[in-house]
Structures are given as structure tokens and as C-alpha cells.
Image 1 (tube, rainbow, N blue to C red):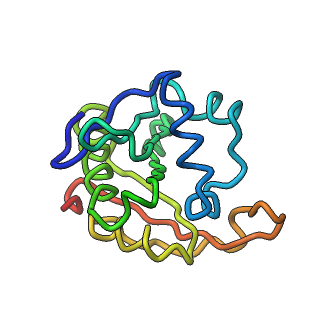
Image 2: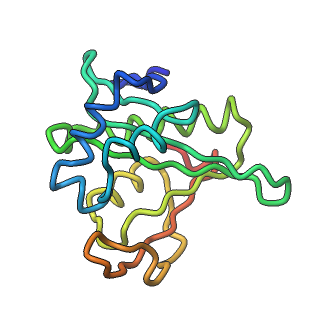
Length: 162
């Protein structure tokens, strides 16, 4: 799937070392902590995972999940970019590209994302795409040190996509 500046490619085993490198970087690990080689293989490979590429180089990853219950049908997205790729609009482009796929091809009417409530960079990026803040989920996610931090639930409807 091609965006304006990125290409999303289905994940393969060849992506695993680069994904581990991205997720191990201290600026990313504080949000995506706890990934080792086996967890990357188990959770990030497969039909719902994509490498984010710019000029043929993997700069990050994006994954989605789907809730298929007819009364609650929606999709969720997670994104991680290497810090060298921050500040260039690549995350927003990857999000827009994945959102269009989820709306147009997968038939979803709503997409959610749940960044840490204090991850200001991610929240700004998602807001630029059209995601709206729904509310704070208190003590939502455990950090590597065992402490809990709040998450921000955000959603996107097709008409919100910018």
C-alpha cells in the first residue's frame, strides 16, 4: 500500500531484525517495551502487520487488529517508527494509508488507537490524521518497571480522515 511518502509492505521474517532494532531504541522502547526476538516474531509477523518503508528502507512498523462482532465491529492500529524518522510526517502518512485500507477494503466504520496519555508526539500525529480524543483510560498499561500509566483512547471515522 502506497501513501504519499511511505509504502506499507506485509511483514516477512526478513523484517524481524529491523523491527527489533526499532523497538529496542530507547525512544521507542519507553512506549513499546518488552519486545525480544520471539515476541516480535509472534506478534508482529502475519497478515495484519506491515513494514513502514521510506525510499526502500524500513523505518518502522504498523499493525492492526479487528473486532468482528457485528454489533461492535471496528479496527485498531498501532505504529512504531525509528526516531530517525520522527518529525517528517511519516507516521501520519502511514496512519492515513492504513486507515484508508481499513475503511475502504476491510469495511470498517471506526478505527481506534490508544497511545500513552503523555505521549504528546504520537497524539499530535494522530490528531493531524483526524483521530479525536475520547477519554483517558486510567492505569491502562504496565511499563517495564511494573508501574501503570494512563492511556488515551482516540477514534477515527471515515469523515474525520484528513
